[in-house]
Amino acid sequence: MKNEKTYELVLTALFTAIIVIMAFTPLGYIPLVVINATVIHIPVILGALFLGPKKGAFLGFVFGLTSFINNTFKAATASAFVFSPVLAANMVGVSGIFKSMYICFVPRILVGIIPYFVYILIRNLLKSEQKAWRIVIHGAAAVILFISVRAFVNNLAEGLNSLVGTGIGLACGIVLFIVLTVTAKSKGASGIAFAYAGLSGAFTNTLFVMSGIFILYKDAYANALGIAGDAVIDVIMGVISFNGIVEAVVAAILIAGVGAALVHVKPVKEWKSAQSAAQK
Image (cartoon, rainbow, N blue to C red; front, side, top):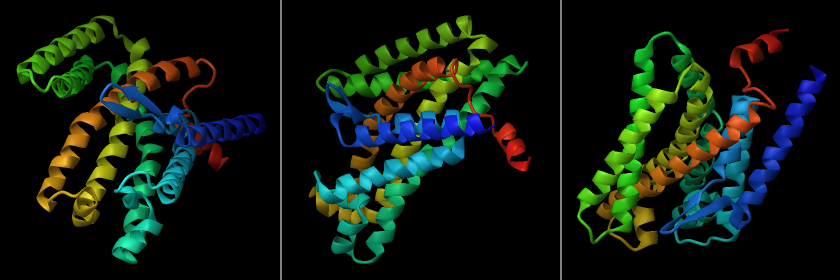
């Protein structure tokens, strides 16, 4: 028991160090031709899976703290105030402190919680005797890939007919569905569950941050970007439908790969066993 706690403490420190290094160096971003995909949330998601949601929430807080520091002292973009209570207070007053605290920390803390339960849910459904769940889960993965590829191709080839992206995305989605249906058995449930955990973690960050910006900072965000207030929703939907989807797919691939390797060293922390240990 003591060795287990020591091991988890060391692993928590390791993930924390990785988050800090990624946040303050270019290692936290992967160039993808037209955008840089953020991958700082990857160690947060992995920490949630292998250390449990409590330590995952702590790692998410660390992620938010690095975002606060970067945006407060570097302020590399005009919209840095949405992640910095200090800058927000100067721009919109005292209310900005609480608004930016929410956007900077809450979505990142949830990144350390939600993926864990998504992993447990998907893994258990895939291992259940009801094969219909496998079809539903594989179909959802195919749809997500279709939307992702379509958005990426259409943004790369703006001059081409949108049917190009739709066709390529549809083909990729069908291929993925066939591969998962033919090859995925109960023993492969963990790998697919890891991928869904990665997707959910990335989407949690994107959706909560962008919705928070729209609800709390619509006018201030528009002024910072030099656009009309009505155009903010278009900017936000563009980030979600392209940047968000690409980052989610990258997270799914990385979490599935790294998770499959780490699970041989340390199993995913079970919520029930953690509760039982706490009671003892």
